Length: 163
Image (cartoon, rainbow, N blue to C red):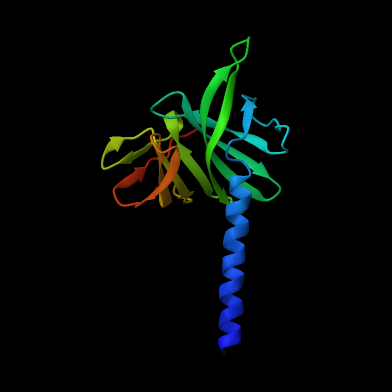
């Protein structure tokens, strides 16, 4: 029994370290702004993003294989044509999303926190057949710490808006 418990704990620890190592591989990575659907030199595919309340920061969605990521990024400079150079500050990683799930954030989000718009709010939501969102998880992009901070879903409401 003790051996089984030991191996279970060891496996969980190894998976946690592996996930942390994968996320930290992207932190500090710099890239030029790209067009939706393009692939960066490191192999991740851009799925779009949006600016936060401090507009030199943004959240972008990327995939590589079956891995889905949210990157908290900061504009560090611009090239001669004005294209922003982004630096990854923090990463949230997920497996594949279910077909009815999506991330809502930035100006394109119809989510409120305690009745107020919060442009630094990132919400993972599920869309029902009745065109209503169920808030599943939520984070705040903490600009001062340059980190995603998991927060309670209490008081968060997201309204479906026809595309």
